[in-house]
Length: 289
Image (cartoon, rainbow, N blue to C red):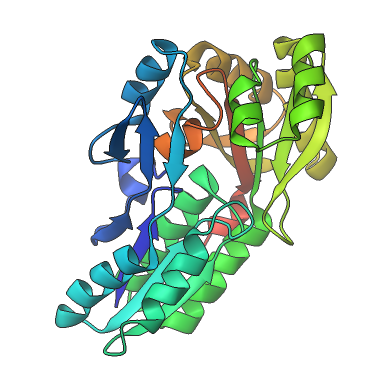
């Protein structure tokens, strides 16, 4: 069996947690100032943010098409027709539906398509765990159950200091976004698990208070001192990411994953100021191969 995913995923993990089998990634496309880039191939996260800061233009992202997925599935099926395709949330992108339609176009393959209802680091954790389980010889139904278990246990939360990219991209209501921008209100954003869409967790008057708001929301889910796997991420705001890590560290017993930039098609919708965190109880990952 082979694993396919998309660039709604970030997978930055310590070497001992990295899967040792190939993961096939179908890229999103980002268009800026008339030029198109395939995420992870033609452009990386840091490059994108430098381009954004140098232009008044806004980026446009495009999901992979059903044909893009079908092309990858056909190539992989030559070597092994069993394919597990693990996609970012259908509530935030049409990527899952494109993968599903692409699978229907490739009759020679046995393709299982999973809607993770999440994205970014949380999706990366699921893909990495699935790959490790596959290498250990787990059957597909057991791997899908593992993906669902990690997804149920994992939370993702974000905030940002500049709303203009979210407003332009339609990720928040235009009028509410303009009002929040005028008032300098920083939103706290989560990813809910039923539809896999963004949900508002609160607001703060300053970015520093927004970072503390993320920690406060973590405490609504887990008691102080809980053993958690934690990964702080950012679009191009390493000082903000480090500040968030410093706020989290004294509160929970953390197994830290590396701080990293989020993938280009996700960061395109936030601009450079975004900081976020993915976290889950550490015991969820016990017993993994």
